[in-house]
View 1: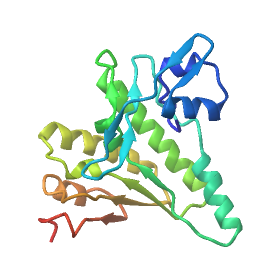
View 2: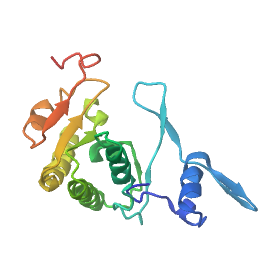
View 3: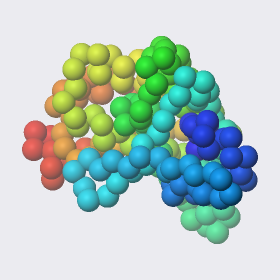
Length: 200
């Protein structure tokens, strides 16, 4: 929802933001309308599931909700310094259902612009650290996957300014891209030493 990835069938319901959110998660039924919820898939090797984002041909990926900034500021007002944690763009793309009519290049460009906007907002709010979770990096990656990841982060990290970026991985090791990750201008990386058998 934060990045405006809302399928047309939910937008057409013309609900308020909260009801639209629940319609995507649970479906929506009323007089003559029956809209199913987003599909669920298993979250990597856990017993949890996630709602599969759908990027349609007319979806415009862009930052439209900065609730994470409000949450950060609310905690700070109570004397608690937090670190916003968001799913990273690579994992977002790998786990999404993308309409084949939507140009991959456009999806990548919109992702870069959106995550740059996230970092700009973080700087404006004086957020010291932001965490981007990229569990998809532990999957078997081919050359195209690694190139996509590097393309995303090479551009996104140019916008980090004084905000530090923690790239977090889990559910395995990142053997296919470790050396590539180390070349990026990230400020910290989280690695899995339990299931990541090759991490050490």
